[in-house]
Image (cartoon, rainbow, N blue to C red; front, side):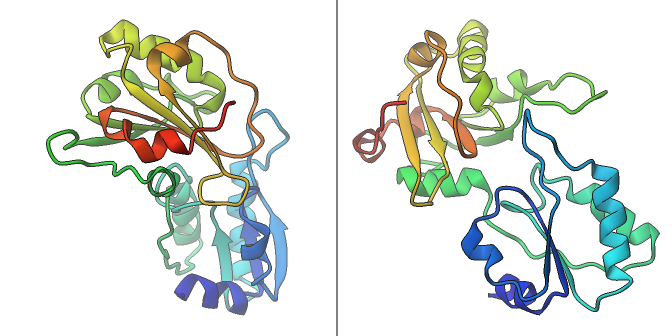
Length: 225
């Protein structure tokens, strides 16, 4: 509710590329697309930081609208630090991250008594000039694993998990555009994922791995990729 009120009252809304049009429709002020999409022309982070500072100097309320929760894989820290350095006060309104939306869509809890007592949120992707992601040890140490920005690498990720010791029969699910009308679900296993390359998805995809996702509800929602 607070997020909706702020979007409506903002003079400027700087938004991610994947924010749903129904959310953007709440805005009465100017909309500025500063989204990043893998493999496409994207707004550089330094420009976003500057645009936020400049907008805050001219408008009483400015919203930086993320596609999920701003505090998870959303570069919020860089933007908050840029605002703080400019002497601009900022508030963070929490959202719903893709892992939670995907679990709700699957009707499969990320934690499950006797099955999953630990969850890891990871991404294998790294930015330009960044060191490689050490995601694999963390993935092996958690009962349930959610991998962000992993759709294009699902085959490789599955193969690496199997090579590191995860059972090939471990349940896995890919959820595209979680909770939206165009949602698609592929409920499968690591072995099946490792054996074939999937077509490129149109929307954002999260990959969920672990015994917690071996549930009938998830299987009934399966849509062939």
